Amino acid sequence: MATTRPEHWIAPEAADTLCGLFAARVARSPDALAYRFYSPRRHAWVELTWAQAADRVAAWRAVLDEAGIGRGDRVAIMLRNSPEWLCVDQAVMSLGAITVGLFCNDTPASNAHLIADSGARLLVAVKARWAERILAADDCPDLERALIFSGEPPENTRIASADAALAAHRDAAPPDRAEAGALASLIYTSGSAGRARGAMLTHANLLSNAHATADALPAIDDEHALSYVPLPHSYERVVNAYRAMIVGAVITFCRHPRFLGLTLARAPITTLVGVPRIYERFYVELNRWIARQPRFMQRLVRLTIATGQSVFERQQGRSRRRARHLLWPLLRYFVARPCLRRFGGQMEVAISGAAALPYPVARTLVGLGLPVLQGYGLTEAGPVVSVNRIDDNQLDSVGRVLDGIETKIGPDNELLVRGPGVMQGYWNRPAVSDTSLSAGGWLHTGDKVSRLDKQRLYLTGRMKEIVVMTTGEKASPEPIEETLQLDELVERAVVVGEARPVLAAVVSCSAETLTPVMQRLSLDPAAPASLISARLENFFIERFAVLLAGYPTHAQIRRVAITTDRWSEHNGLVTATGKIRRRRVARCYAREITRLYGRRTPGEKMDVSQNTNLG
Image (tube, rainbow, N blue to C red; front, side, top):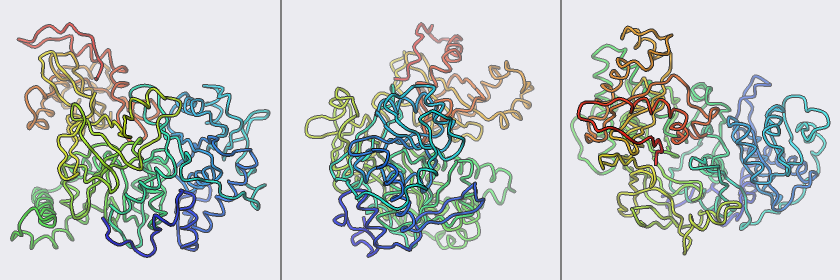
């Protein structure tokens, strides 16, 4: 935690709303660079100062006021990560209205549910066809108008041009009407256990969490942060967007994940706020590169990582100085730096949240000299609950609890949280709200902790994501899945086995990487039957046995179903932050799972259950 804040930071007492925070930043540094983004229309990078962003917010406020948006109204935002997203967000909240973020890659039916459930009166979207598909999926009776940036608005519809509306309202802007205790946003959870539900978060909830997070993370001079996690997610908004207003950081937007590597290479990024998947991909790509190098180079990289981790442990006060530490400056410059170039040449810290970061990945990053700070949170908590600190970083922990947040362990080791960031409840879900929020304002997180040691959290999995096998053995699928995904052939993995005798895995592999393997096994890559070949399955079982060597016998993978289907947000199998929707995967591949358990190994009891529920 920073003991004293830099002078250019916005103090907590300077603003009591998110709109006040934005106004304070504009007043403090109007001509400083605020946002950078690549414009496909102009084929060039565009930069906005805080004053220019404020002008855009004022224009949007006038447009929304003209549309009759006022206190308590909901406005849906379906834009890619960009300054426009945050400008609309600020304009909506400044009118006392409530934002509802929609994911651009989600299905029209899913986004229609969010609009209908929230009762949004207005939608701001990129493309006309996006709005048309949403209205085709659900009429959304409360939606009066959709403002779009590209495509021709159909005649006699609720769809209109955003550019035309902005051009007509650039001068007059109504005053700020935001209040600290008023709802700022309905942030919908992933809905892995049913339809998505909107967590009601106030200005005070989000602002307090942004300040606490800013104090916990390191202060970086001339900070440039990358924004690529979708902004509808509270993690991206609080840790990146709102924190940037507090500390005066520059946000560089990556409008689509496929441009992530290019953006990192061409922008002076110092801070990467990401989800584990991006770090896992780096880990896999690094191992592929190492495998292609001469043996002496392979040994040199492994020596560098081992030495770097040893230096890290000494810096954390958990180890003594060793003779090999004298090699670290040379190893870092000549070996570690080239390995980290895919993250850009100026990266100073990596932050990981939204899911657990596998230990081998974290060890590799710190071993190469890049501090990685793993944190924990959930939308309903505002969202950040804990994060590791630069000078107190435990790689197997999700860090120390933020200042102002209380924690305790409930029944079955469930983590309970209380603090200023905790939501007001779920939108139009009073019964579910009463279940999630107990007496005294304690939020039931649904996450299990192994212990609370000086407010440091060690998570062990979800309350309901425990596989209970017919043998009576229990296994937590999440750490097993994380380990399987470290295999270079595996893009995604889901472990099943509830009411079954053994564990099985459904794995998604790239057809490109799988083809050479199938050819070596004398299988025809073009034949669908090859994917269910016993030779291919045994090949994966043997690989997984090596990865899971440290796991108990009952936690080994005994069956594998292989698919070349790509799991993504588009087909509903992955959330916007990269989390796998485990139950949906199980339903989608129910036939393959049934096939896996249709065979018996010697001595194995007959499996009589058809239950594919993941708990």
